[in-house]
Image (cartoon, rainbow, N blue to C red; front, top):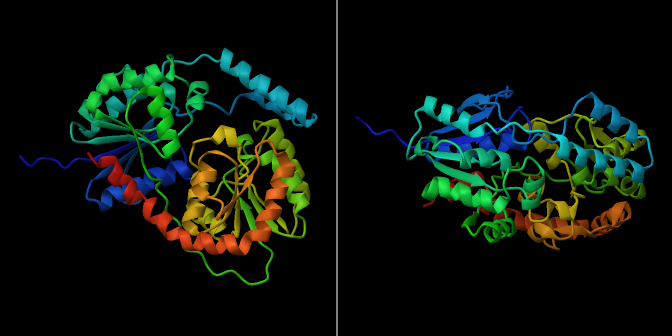
Length: 412
């Protein structure tokens, strides 16, 4: 009887639609596995309706990766009302509502382990196969630590969120250090832990006492076309309207740069369930739309998203520095691979990854004024930053790509 080749199985409960970074991560790693001669399989959320050509995909996971956000009619009504109040009142009210929701929300036992056990059984998975979880919550991991043995597969877990985030959003019943050590006790040498920045890997090593290896990011980007001389710099904010991405800072900063640049802001849909400060900012930006400000109020497919980034002269990433901290940013990683300079928050991985030659930093706590100042400085330095970014892009691509990531996952 011929022995079956090992398979690389990717379980992504956050892969619920045909757009976004969940799809690009899962697809690019699956394609890298296929190029390496290892048959890939993707287990997506039940709501996934997209297709991934050439990759066996099953939309069968009902357990959520993150339950934060969304909400019912009451939340939408309250957030909508708060969005019309002064900004400090809106921010305080939204914070209180989020805290109350965390305290009061009951959570059924996480079902990811049971779902994976069933799916792996159907696939005939066993020792020698790999199972990758690249986006996973504390609650998801707790179900694995207390659950079945997953048919003897080797479990690859990428810890991509800050420890404090994992403790606050969809946490495990026990503290994170106990959870990770329990996971290691459950799976022994079949567990491999990773993080996609060196700082985050070090944080989790110190927290758990377990080995956590740093792995690259699976970046795939197009080449940039030459820019017309003399045009206003095109500054792009992409990835959606969220509080932690600094969206509420944009109206004032854009207004301050009037006549010096043109902006495209991809917000995606903004509705009454969005944070009140995000709703306020979105209305202000809608009122400013014109030749120098274009809003893209929808999610973008992979081709349109790549075209938007490729049209940029400067990427605008006014994220909450302390919230992101050691976390990676897929959009910044794409910008560095394309040779695009960026504006990033001071401190953390984003500043260290880009460095002063390719980015201007926003001082912590600088608000919209700090962002406007960083924009002004970046426009003044744009030619030199662009030249440096183009020169350094190839080195970044050589390190951060799906094939390098796949090799890191399967290395012994």
